Image (tube, rainbow, N blue to C red; front, side):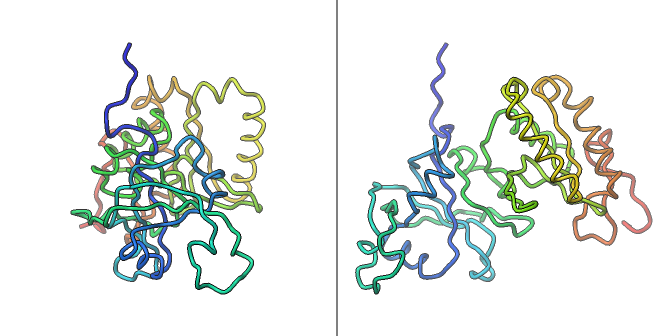
Length: 277
């Protein structure tokens, strides 16, 4: 069987990175390079490095362009360099000997349409593939964690259930990435897609029990679905359970006058009332 991926489906071929100051954006625009600390690659990007393309998520300092991806560039080459090499005119400081990957780029290109974040969220990095990047309508479309998560994400979108993917949260001084989280009127819902390897790893189960307890005691509801449930019972079990839990928590909070209840039988729609009219 041929297991080679087609172009555009390689994990990590596009890396979405953060731009949180205008000085760095000037360097990208005028000098055509970007830097990432070596330690950040070792922490966040193992197995998804090096990228062939970089895309840039602009933060609140960019005003009207904030919380969106508008620009990207193809990678020419990558080299390791110390900060004092990258910024020779900078006065010596505690960061002078910090090591970075200097990523040299072709000139910036602009997307036909920006990729927005619905909730103005913070991100760390998003390694993705070209196919997802070129078709994404919002930040959550970019994530490429597993086929299981992709299947559940597609179902949530079909049923008009708004979720944030791989959001970074801190609970009791511990940092967690949640597969999917949904903001409801009376609480928050974490949905986890647990593959077969999770069930076969007792250590992982113990860690996740600790995680579940920390999240629950901090006001989260946690739902976990297995490979079988997502592959075989997605519409009959997973989506109804998610919908019931959302409704128990008062409905989806979307900044409307009233939270929105979910009725999975109607493809994520719900019965309108006089306030909707």
